[in-house]
View 1 (cartoon, rainbow, N blue to C red):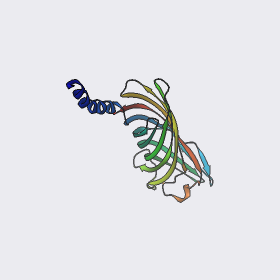
View 2: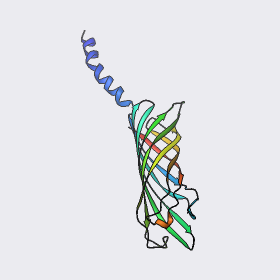
View 3: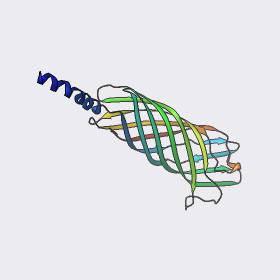
View 4: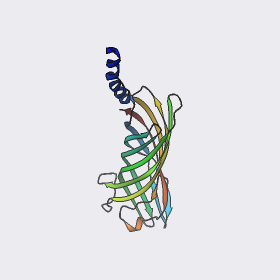
Length: 198
């Protein structure tokens, strides 16, 4: 009888310990590349070089296969506008804040996933030798975020995460009317990093 009573008292503790083993959230840090295609509109050509930066993400699992994700990224690159009789180059920084729904699948140690959401982008010209004009100001853009990738389980707590993100938005002009292309395009962002589950 005492053993049965002891087992009855220990059951809630065992259940709580089992629940604690189930990861309900994760945080990740990734190296981020940023590629923006060359676009032309209104007799203006906008080109960008490859950008490099960092991506920070937090996921909260709603179910074992779906999650809500919040992201912050920072990257830098050069943007060049070529218009009739003028050319301007901006050393630019990009900050992104986004929220997405993530759907994942499990295949042994591989966990492919897809995501969709919305992002706010802030482009800032950096006043250094990479910028050849004093004109230009912070420009905001809203974007549709789509992506997918695969996470490989290194341990119960750690994953290696490789992903591709695409953000669709209207081209920016740093507040200079003569550089408005009025074109929509896709910014591509491959990323690789590590996720910690807790």
